[in-house]
Image (tube, one colour):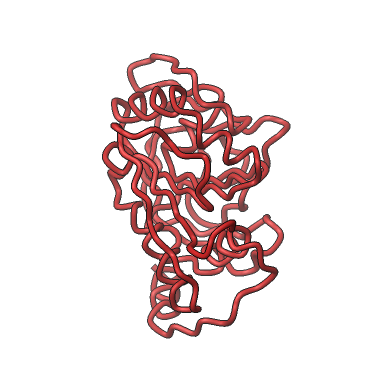
Length: 236
């Protein structure tokens, strides 16, 4: 973090916010503030170029037409790619995984070139993945089960430069039968979990915050209501 305020980029919430994934930025801001850090959300909408100077970025889910708009915007204004290149943390939810990949295929059979931050490709599957999903994390620094709600038809295949975020214990995950959920490549993390994902997985939120703040650890933040939510969702 280069300034006194942690700046969290909420990327294209006007087109990539179908499932309330903008809540992830709110969770990050609140968890930072509760520990005494100044934090603000910078909304980047379609009229705006994507700044490369922010500390942390989040992108949400969307339908096919919105994905195409987002893809073109990120290709035209490559600030997100430049930020990831210098190691800024990025959280991509659901369709954002597809947008950040090499290419994705729409439900109508159109193949769209992606941004290329993930070594992945995505094609529609015959059965929609919808329902609760629980996973065991594979990313160092995460120990608690991850929980969320998946709702997608995409089948995402990981290339050699990408690894899975977690291994599925319930649900579908990436949808190609490899037992994996999500993707990790450099400082960019992706997951199909809605919820919002960070409200349901505070350990993941704090991992992103430590990276953005440049600290090795954060002060504990006991929140009984968050733990209650996790218990309920893990039992659902």
